[in-house]
Amino acid sequence: MNALEYVPAPAFEDNYIWLVSDGHHAVVVDPGEAAPVRAYLAKRGWRLSAILLTHHHQDHVGGVADLLNGQGVPVYGPAGESIAHLTHRLRSGDRVSIAEPALEFTVLDVPGHTSGHIAYFQAADPAGTPHVFCGDTLFACGCGRLFEGTPAQMLDSLDSLAALPGATQVHCAHEYTLSNIRFALACEPDNAQLLAWRDKATALRERGVPTLPTTIEHERAVNPFLRADNPAVQSTLAEQLHETVPDRLAAFTLMREWKNRFR
Ligand code: ZN
Ligand code: FE
Image 1 (cartoon, helix red, strand yellow):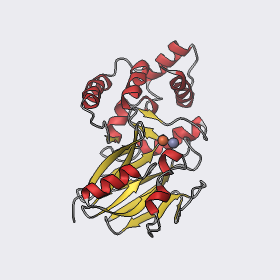
Image 2: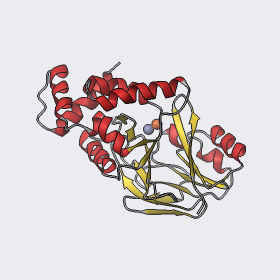
Image 3: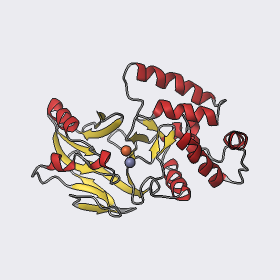
C-alpha cells in the first residue's frame, strides 16, 4: 500500500486544515476556508475525495460549500450538531471507510468545546502509526475552550483521547502551542520535558514550521490539562488561585478558568 501524507494547510490566523493523501486523492479535515485547500490540491495535483468535520464552528466548516461546488464529495460530521451539507452523520463508535486514499476511522464523541464535537481515530496508517484528528478538543499543551460543555464533559473527552496509543499522531486544528506552553509552565514550572519542548517549539516557530502533529505520549508528559491529577500541578493551582483542590475535576476546572484569563 502507498504511504500516506498528512499535511497541515495554514488558514486564517492560526488554523490548520489537515489533508491526508495517497499521492492522487486527498481527504480534508475541517476546511474553514476553501482557498488554501484548493491551492494545496492544485499544487500537488490531488483530487478531493471526502470532507471530514469535527464540529460546527465557522473556522472549521466555512469552506465546505465552496469546496463542494456541485461535486458529489461525501461530507462526514457530527450527528449532534447542525451543519449544512453533511452526507454522513456520525456518532461515537461509528466507522468511516474511505476508498481513496484508503482510510478507516473510528469516531469518538469528545464534547466540551462544542456539545457534539467528534474526533476521528485511525488505528494504523500503512506504516502502522495511529492518527487522530481532534479539532478544537486537544491542542499541543492545551485544550479547547468550553463553549458548550461542562468541565466534567471535557475532562472525560480528554481522558478518552489520552487513552489512545502513545504513538498516536495528534492533528490539532490550531497553532496555539507557544502560548499554551507559557501557561503550562505557569502550572508546572519544573517539568523538564516541558522546558525542553518550549525551546524546541520556539525554534520551530522562528522558522515558520508547524509544531504539529504532537503525540499522545508527549501530551501526557507536558499538557497540564492531561495532568490534572499531578501533585505539582495541583499545588500550583492551590497556591496561585488560593483555592482548595480536592480532586482532579476541581483541578481541571480551576486550570481551564485560569487559562481563560491568563495573559
Ligand atoms: Zn472551535
Ligand atoms: Fe477552531
